Image (cartoon, rainbow, N blue to C red; front, side, top):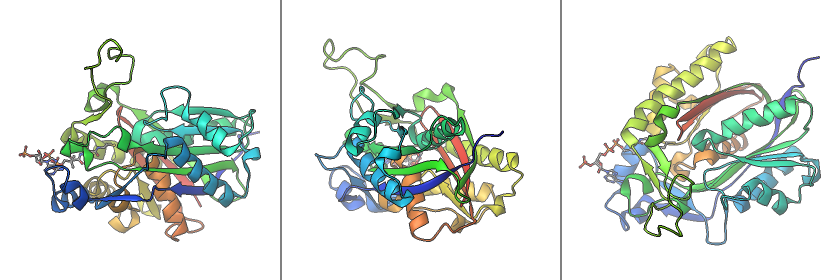
Length: 329
Ligand SMILES: CC(C)(COP(=O)(O)OP(=O)(O)OC[C@H]1O[C@@H](n2cnc3c(N)ncnc32)[C@H](O)[C@@H]1OP(=O)(O)O)[C@@H](O)C(=O)NCCC(=O)NCCS
């Protein structure tokens, strides 16, 4: 007997109410709406309130996804939270989410760090765990409070990122939204290109070195840009080939929402029209692990994804990590 077919039974998203526009940022650092928009496609991003955490946003998105799936917290036996901005280094954000939602103690709950590819990594992990038959319903969440690790004096990074969360419920397929495949990659030779310094064991303990590295994002943007295009194209081509699909069979691509120019380049390399790519980064910026589930939920609810469509998810992120997944709705 083969593995049971697994599907996305529901999707949900949460974005904090506070909007930070490019004009707002231009009052804080030496930048402009024109520079940010032409280089990235971003107009504004959401910023979590002081009382909001990665886990509270994750739980909010998860509640919407569970309602969409028609299941309750009692049905969940696995929670994976993909994040680079956990509430705390320990315990896991997934345990906070479990507590917010009242998911039973019999559930396995853990975090996963694959940066902006985190949601696809978590999706593949949950798919494999459900496929084993030992778990029935999983919450797969991407959630970030990147405003807590952005250096708000660094114009080369602070204009790019935003906060938010997206979630899906995975469970036994009933004929729709089946996961067809996923592929994961990592290129650890490029760990230096995008980092959050501080807060890890490879830096001096802050109690011994209060002047040590700050817990801030640092990035070599130009290098990442080039590699990201190559990696996303490879991840897309590999999975299409594996499933014997021509690119034009993909009705909707949900790419990681980092930069419109990266998305446009992939559209050209795959010879797929730009209108097949769902884009909401103009309103949210780069929300790292939250970006794909946030876009996926919006694409579904807006009717951009229709029954029978084959959707390609494709991401890249720090690590560098990258990956792709196929879902037939
Ligand atoms: C970050 C990124 C938008 C920068 O665009 P770019 O065209 O590569 O620009 P550069 O970094 O070469 O900088 C060009 C100039 O703009 C300046 N600049 C950088 N940020 C600026 C800002 N926010 N406003 C105004 N000027 C800015 C630079 O200082 C530089 O000035 P100089 O020529 O006088 O030195 C782009 O490289 C990018 O998107 N890279 C990928 C990053 C990414 O996706 N990261 C997330 C991975 S998940």
